[in-house]
Image: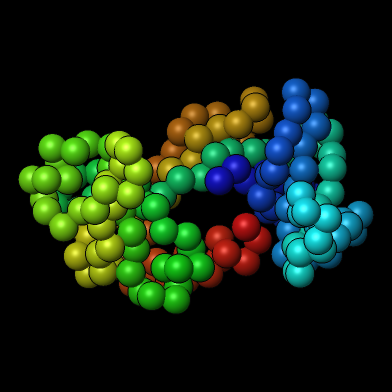
Length: 161
Protein backbone atom coordinates (compact mmCIF):
# COMPACT_ATOMS: atom_id res chain seq x y z
CA UNK A 1 0.00 0.00 0.00
CA UNK A 2 1.15 3.55 -0.68
CA UNK A 3 1.28 5.97 2.25
CA UNK A 4 1.63 9.75 2.18
CA UNK A 5 2.42 12.24 4.92
CA UNK A 6 0.25 15.36 4.58
CA UNK A 7 -0.14 18.06 7.25
CA UNK A 8 1.78 15.77 9.65
CA UNK A 9 -0.82 12.98 9.25
CA UNK A 10 -0.46 9.67 7.43
CA UNK A 11 -2.95 8.74 4.74
CA UNK A 12 -3.29 5.99 2.22
CA UNK A 13 -2.57 7.27 -1.28
CA UNK A 14 -5.03 6.33 -3.98
CA UNK A 15 -4.86 6.65 -7.73
CA UNK A 16 -2.45 9.34 -8.81
CA UNK A 17 -1.22 11.06 -11.92
CA UNK A 18 2.13 12.72 -12.59
CA UNK A 19 1.03 15.81 -10.65
CA UNK A 20 -1.82 14.87 -8.29
CA UNK A 21 -3.18 12.06 -6.12
CA UNK A 22 -6.01 11.03 -3.82
CA UNK A 23 -5.58 10.85 -0.07
CA UNK A 24 -7.86 8.29 1.58
CA UNK A 25 -8.89 8.52 5.22
CA UNK A 26 -11.17 6.83 7.71
CA UNK A 27 -11.69 10.20 9.42
CA UNK A 28 -13.26 13.24 7.76
CA UNK A 29 -10.31 15.57 8.21
CA UNK A 30 -10.41 19.14 6.88
CA UNK A 31 -11.01 19.27 3.14
CA UNK A 32 -11.96 15.60 2.81
CA UNK A 33 -15.25 14.60 1.21
CA UNK A 34 -17.29 11.38 1.29
CA UNK A 35 -15.84 8.59 -0.83
CA UNK A 36 -18.17 7.46 -3.60
CA UNK A 37 -17.26 4.11 -5.18
CA UNK A 38 -17.37 3.28 -8.90
CA UNK A 39 -21.04 2.23 -8.56
CA UNK A 40 -21.97 5.66 -7.21
CA UNK A 41 -22.48 4.41 -3.65
CA UNK A 42 -21.17 6.32 -0.64
CA UNK A 43 -18.73 4.18 1.37
CA UNK A 44 -19.17 4.50 5.14
CA UNK A 45 -16.20 5.88 7.09
CA UNK A 46 -14.11 6.48 3.99
CA UNK A 47 -13.17 9.95 2.83
CA UNK A 48 -11.09 11.34 0.00
CA UNK A 49 -9.16 14.48 -0.86
CA UNK A 50 -7.34 15.35 -4.09
CA UNK A 51 -4.05 17.18 -3.69
CA UNK A 52 -1.03 18.07 -5.82
CA UNK A 53 1.90 15.72 -5.18
CA UNK A 54 4.12 18.63 -4.11
CA UNK A 55 1.81 19.21 -1.11
CA UNK A 56 2.94 15.91 0.42
CA UNK A 57 5.68 15.96 3.04
CA UNK A 58 6.76 12.37 2.30
CA UNK A 59 5.49 9.24 0.52
CA UNK A 60 6.44 5.60 0.52
CA UNK A 61 5.23 2.16 -0.45
CA UNK A 62 4.63 0.08 2.66
CA UNK A 63 4.99 -3.70 2.53
CA UNK A 64 5.35 -6.34 5.17
CA UNK A 65 7.62 -9.36 4.90
CA UNK A 66 8.12 -12.30 7.22
CA UNK A 67 10.93 -14.69 7.75
CA UNK A 68 9.42 -18.15 8.07
CA UNK A 69 11.66 -21.19 8.48
CA UNK A 70 14.61 -19.02 7.47
CA UNK A 71 13.05 -17.82 4.19
CA UNK A 72 11.45 -14.49 3.27
CA UNK A 73 7.76 -14.32 2.31
CA UNK A 74 5.24 -11.61 1.47
CA UNK A 75 2.45 -10.92 3.95
CA UNK A 76 -0.74 -11.44 1.95
CA UNK A 77 -3.29 -10.91 4.72
CA UNK A 78 -4.76 -7.52 5.47
CA UNK A 79 -4.03 -5.78 8.75
CA UNK A 80 -7.73 -6.17 9.66
CA UNK A 81 -7.55 -9.95 9.11
CA UNK A 82 -4.37 -10.20 11.20
CA UNK A 83 -6.10 -8.36 14.06
CA UNK A 84 -9.19 -10.57 13.80
CA UNK A 85 -7.44 -13.97 13.56
CA UNK A 86 -4.06 -13.45 15.30
CA UNK A 87 -2.58 -15.16 12.24
CA UNK A 88 -1.15 -14.07 8.95
CA UNK A 89 -1.21 -15.34 5.43
CA UNK A 90 2.21 -15.57 3.83
CA UNK A 91 2.77 -15.89 0.11
CA UNK A 92 5.35 -16.63 -2.55
CA UNK A 93 5.79 -16.98 -6.29
CA UNK A 94 8.37 -19.71 -5.65
CA UNK A 95 6.62 -23.02 -6.33
CA UNK A 96 9.58 -25.25 -5.37
CA UNK A 97 9.85 -23.40 -2.05
CA UNK A 98 6.12 -23.78 -1.36
CA UNK A 99 6.43 -27.53 -2.04
CA UNK A 100 9.58 -27.88 0.07
CA UNK A 101 8.00 -26.25 3.14
CA UNK A 102 4.54 -27.76 2.59
CA UNK A 103 1.07 -26.56 3.49
CA UNK A 104 0.89 -23.88 0.79
CA UNK A 105 -2.16 -23.59 -1.46
CA UNK A 106 -2.15 -22.28 -5.00
CA UNK A 107 -4.36 -19.16 -5.00
CA UNK A 108 -3.42 -17.75 -8.39
CA UNK A 109 -1.69 -19.03 -11.49
CA UNK A 110 1.78 -18.50 -9.98
CA UNK A 111 1.11 -17.57 -6.33
CA UNK A 112 1.03 -19.81 -3.24
CA UNK A 113 -0.18 -18.95 0.26
CA UNK A 114 -0.19 -20.45 3.73
CA UNK A 115 -1.77 -19.31 7.01
CA UNK A 116 0.64 -19.26 9.94
CA UNK A 117 0.46 -18.15 13.56
CA UNK A 118 2.66 -15.33 14.83
CA UNK A 119 4.53 -17.85 16.98
CA UNK A 120 5.58 -19.77 13.84
CA UNK A 121 7.44 -16.92 12.16
CA UNK A 122 11.05 -15.96 12.79
CA UNK A 123 10.64 -12.24 12.05
CA UNK A 124 8.03 -9.71 10.91
CA UNK A 125 9.47 -6.79 8.95
CA UNK A 126 8.05 -3.49 7.74
CA UNK A 127 9.59 -2.41 4.43
CA UNK A 128 9.32 1.20 3.25
CA UNK A 129 10.24 2.01 -0.33
CA UNK A 130 10.37 5.70 -1.32
CA UNK A 131 7.80 7.13 -3.70
CA UNK A 132 8.54 10.26 -5.67
CA UNK A 133 11.67 12.01 -4.35
CA UNK A 134 11.11 13.24 -0.81
CA UNK A 135 13.94 14.03 1.56
CA UNK A 136 12.66 11.91 4.47
CA UNK A 137 12.49 8.54 2.72
CA UNK A 138 15.56 8.44 0.49
CA UNK A 139 16.17 4.70 0.40
CA UNK A 140 14.45 1.43 1.16
CA UNK A 141 14.30 0.86 4.91
CA UNK A 142 13.44 -2.27 6.86
CA UNK A 143 12.33 -2.34 10.48
CA UNK A 144 11.68 -5.45 12.51
CA UNK A 145 8.42 -5.50 14.45
CA UNK A 146 8.69 -7.70 17.57
CA UNK A 147 6.25 -10.63 17.44
CA UNK A 148 4.45 -9.47 20.58
CA UNK A 149 3.80 -6.08 18.92
CA UNK A 150 2.40 -7.28 15.56
CA UNK A 151 -1.22 -6.68 16.60
CA UNK A 152 -0.35 -3.21 17.93
CA UNK A 153 1.43 -2.45 14.64
CA UNK A 154 -1.53 -3.77 12.60
CA UNK A 155 -3.95 -1.61 14.63
CA UNK A 156 -1.77 1.43 13.97
CA UNK A 157 -1.65 0.81 10.20
CA UNK A 158 -5.36 -0.02 10.12
CA UNK A 159 -6.14 3.29 11.90
CA UNK A 160 -5.22 5.37 8.84
CA UNK A 161 -5.03 2.94 5.94
